[in-house]
Length: 330
View (cartoon, rainbow, N blue to C red):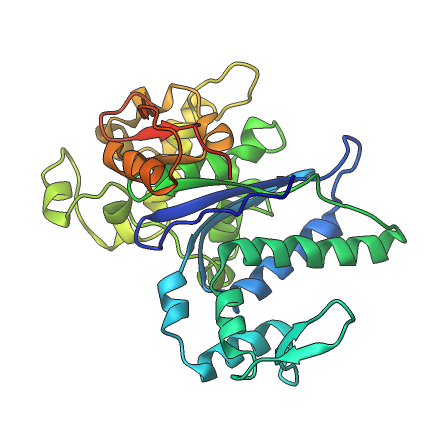
């Protein structure tokens, strides 16, 4: 059967939680291979119209939370498109002026391939495809292998604006802790938390982290009304997010490691006032098994737009404003 076309929503709606796993059960990425994957991620984000919020490169899989900037791509000039392409592939590189037919001959486009390039750089799907294919080619050359490196297509979960993105980002950064690889999330080298705490300058070039105002969808005045909350520049930095991740990581999950409570208390200043403990106590498997997470109306609209069977959205993390659906497959 032919593959179904992936359905992506506008940058106005939310982000994408993207995961993909290495083929087979025995292959594990080495230090150098994770380093290359990270450098490749940095290079491709310079060219594609994506806003990377968080990531984690594990031994046999990776997580990415990113927003596709499709609208920015649609309005980008020819000069910007070519500049982005050169940032990825070198100053002397030029995008294909058309497409290749079955005989390998190039069929030139009337505009020299600009609109084709626009579509390519504005697609989150193409971004992940480029990331995986480039890594696969490098990995196979390194090990003198042939064939697939990744186990099938990547999976993308739609995460609508708001609290769901904040929790998903925390879930991603806690992967090494839950797996028992490190004690603290910033101790892991190949994650957004590790990069933000260990190499802030490098992180500022790669990551566009969520601000607490955006994540909780509250105005600064509303946040000021919460107990012991002061709206300062700190709300837009990395410290508040680190506290949120620590609170999340301190919640015990069966069969998973957690951050010791004493350590959580050392970094906890105000996060408990947001009431996240109760919501995070539930399983977060929705981020790997769902296809969309957001408000009730968002999920209803998504199902309607996709022209699929309607099933009532289910409450997500026991909150009154986050819902999820597993009806569709991407």
